[in-house]
Structure formats: structure tokens, C-alpha cells
Image 1 (cartoon, rainbow, N blue to C red):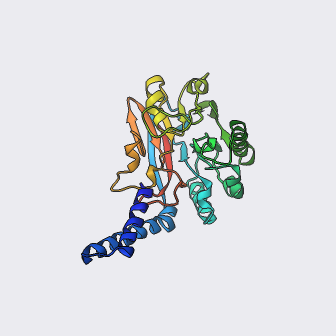
Image 2: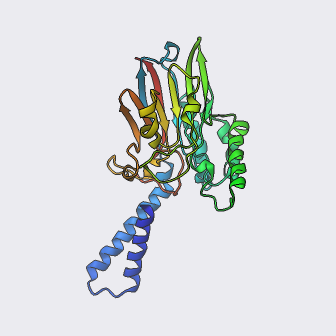
Image 3: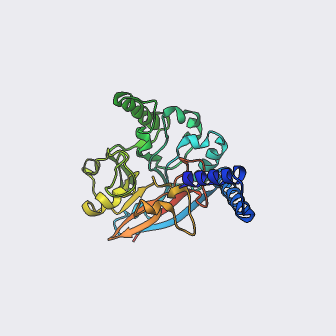
Length: 313
């Protein structure tokens, strides 16, 4: 959408600057529209991109163990770390804002990078400063599989780079990266199970990316209260809702299109669940708008930290 807007602005600018205008008001109107478009894009790049919103919600369910009543989860997504190359201090500010919430657990739902591990290396020290009592748990998103990198010309090279991203999260950052597997958090003898899958695409939504998730494998041996981390929210409707009883699913991916107008986002053209919280048949999906960008512009769509407090119903 932003690309089309930019093209339209350039065309209008060309018309005003080059072609004779027999009707002067049209020319001045076109020039004003061009100025407005450029002003909005400039604001989105230099101001809107660095705005930060903390969305707070309580999630209640009868299966939440008593020991986890009041448990605080910070959900973040889509860092796309090259976003911060022109302003690294903003990532430090985002990390400080997360830590200020004093979370018990941080859940990251994918897209650490856009094109490769080298994108992340300048931010290792900053990302290591993320603090939660039970650490950071993460999954891989579509960009983490580096399917958009033109420098990776064959599958073997691309797979080595994907493995490098995975090792970076586990070894350099100390995160619990879940690749079609699960992990348990224990408190006072009670358990909360985290289930994580590689990027999984639901049919009929979004755009074709890469489908590497294996939810049955990830759920194997689990019971009790479970939280699923899956990058693409279309997975919720395509498999999680019809085939599982997982109460709470966390996703990202859509960025809420990095544009929001009166609560509406263009991402809703492609995704049935584009941003925010969705409840259906006793199951819940939370879609985070992300911290980073694919295009360096956010218009009325701040970077988002989702703060979820678990309550035993």
C-alpha cells in the first residue's frame, strides 16, 4: 500500500512539475496532495517508527495452575533488527521498556532478522539485556528462514544460514528457541507448557511464505495448560482451532500493516485475525504488531509490547 502511495505521489509530482496545467487549481491541488503524502511518510519514518505502545490484558482460564495466577508474560514479535541500523538507541529504549514491566517470561514470536545473522550481531549486547525470571522463549518466523535473501542462491547455503540464526538465538542470546518442540516452566510443583512451531502458513490467508511447522510433533507428550507460539496468525484458524484444545496462542507476522486508521488496518484484507485479541470457542489468539519494520515507516501503528497477566478463572 505504501509503495502504491509513493508511486502515485511521484506521478503527481511529475505532472505538476513538467506538464502544462491549463487549470491552475488542479495543479496546486495535486502539488498539495504530493506534499501531504511526503509529509506523512516522513513523519512515519522519523517519528512514527519509534513510537511504542504497551498493550495490557488479563487472560483468565480455569486450567491455569494456581502457582501461575498473576504470572506476567511479555509478548513481542518481528524485531527485523536492520530496522534499528540508523537509530540503535531505539532498540535499547524498547529493551528498557520491556524490562521495566518485570516480566516472568518473555515470548518472542519470530522474525528476528530479515536477511541474515549478520543483521543481528551488532545488537547482541542489547538483546542479552532482556530480563525475565524464566527467560526468553522464541520461535522462527518466515523471514528467519531467509527466503527473501538474494545472496543465498541454493537450498544448502540457505539452510546453513537458517541454522546460524537458530544457533545465534540459543547460544549468543541464551533464548529457548522452540522448533516444533515444547518446554516446561515449573513453579511450586505445578507446570505451564510452552509449545513452539516453525513458521506455519494457513491456507487462504496472507501470502505464500514457507511452511515448516509440525504442531502434532511440538505437542507430543504435553498436557495441562499450554501456550502456543506460532509466527503466522493464519495458523490459528487453519489448525489450532479445529484440531487442538490449546487455550492461548501468541502470534505476530502481520505488523498490523504498519498502518492503522481509526482502528482499521489494511492487514485485515489478507488476514482474518490481523491485530489484537481474538476469542472463539474457549480459545484465544493474540496478534502482536511487532517492534521492527519491513518498510521503515509506521503510520498511527506504534511498535507494540503486549503485557499479558494470567489469571486462574
